[in-house]
Length: 423
Image (cartoon, rainbow, N blue to C red):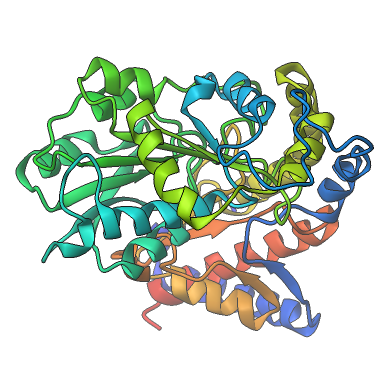
């Protein structure tokens, strides 16, 4: 469009509304059925990963362990070394889980609620408990926090991570604040990368709660689209700040191989790791070692993984460019929306005019395109400005995605113009 719609006189707004209503009616007449609600890999991405299922001719680990049997609670040594190599982690910090890092996060909350950590009271015994939730953020993080009765405190995101002035002020004053969620690289949904300064401040800040924990969900740590972006070492930052036990680090291969059959891990300080394994030893005898071997024999090492991720990026990059090019063509210069242009990850975040996100998504749904619900990127599913929308471009085919984005842009414009017209 190219013109600042927010400054159009009433008669031109009315004419634009009439045009958009007609365009929207045309889309509704097509009876579309497109789904962009979650960040799921497409069939093409999953097909590319099929070799993982063809590699298990020898069910024995490097040290002779029979992966078909019980044991090895912390995960196969070579699997821990693999995660250490690709993420620059000490393998002695790593615990390998099942297929879901979200499961490991949930279990971590359960342990802290029941047993506490570091000799501090169990979180479940506390009359009040709070958690910092950088927003927009990941709805499943917020669901876990709410499930366990935490008051969620929304912290605004900046271009370098959460607003650290606010974070530092809050945690220094309130011992009931027990932790913070962080997606530090290509954050969900905005694609923001934490700066070195942000990581250092998180590691070194003074907290009123001695058992304050950083839930470091590096879900997109190797999901680069335009060259590698380096992330500062959260363990080094916390050690330098005098808080070595502060981080819990999570990662999985879910969007590297298969979301239902990847390999998840968490990492912690040596002392925290020992405490976690003690509790886990009652819960399980060990995770799926056959899947660990399958994954290892396909991804092998850091250079092999880097090549694999570059191949996946070749499939994903055109999808992100369809989204961004369509947004720029249809909404650039209109004043009706703003969006990010991520360098990696799985999402694009768009902000409508205040008060227009719900209306936009309702229009899209009624025309056959399902997207993540309005408010989902905020605690309690309440976006205070009703403007943030998460776009998940990874699942649809490219032609479907073009159609969905064209419709979406019509919906953004129509919802905004209706609001500007007072109806």
